[in-house]
Amino acid sequence: KRAPGEAIGGELTAQERFNIALADELRNHANEIDSRLEWQAAKCLVEGKFTVTGEDVPETEIDYGRDAALSFTADDWADPTADVQGAIEEASGLILDLIGSGATDVVMDSKAFALFRKNNDVKELLDLRNGGLDDLNLAPEVGARSFYKGLYGSLRLWVYNDQYVDENDVS
Image 1 (spheres, rainbow, N blue to C red):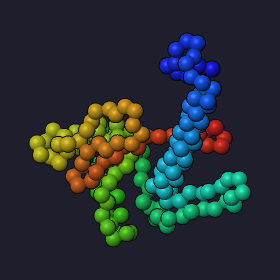
Image 2 (image 1 turned 90 degrees about the vertical axis):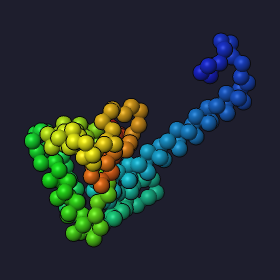
Image 3 (image 1 turned 90 degrees about the horizontal axis):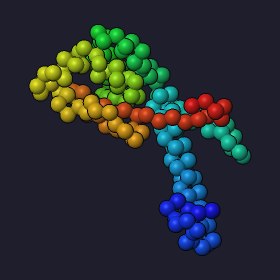
Image 4 (image 1 turned 180 degrees about the horizontal axis):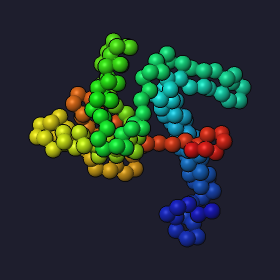
């Protein structure tokens, strides 16, 4: 079979084609490992734990001991008058109370970020000169799974978009 970009009729030897196929397979394998590591990191952020299972691997829960109260959702952010700033400040205070250190980053998906930037209070801050959001990147990001959007006060805002397909073909 002709390789992508190869002239019709082929220019490569069987060994060269084999090497290309092997490199592609190794790249795919490395991507799968990276995806699993990202999945584990995402599970840690969202749930504070994850379960490892597999062939010849006993099912094991890896629990990082993160307090379940540190999970927040943007469920009520669809209302443009929702107190987004208050919710973020409340979450930051809870983090400080529970672990003794303040929050430095806010990670959300693109849906939550869209609600965040449409919020009336956030828009008002965006309109103020030197309101702390001068470097906030509101432009859509294409092709990236995670990206830095800017500062909200002293908090770094991150948008993380990735998905995986589980063993039941659910993404």
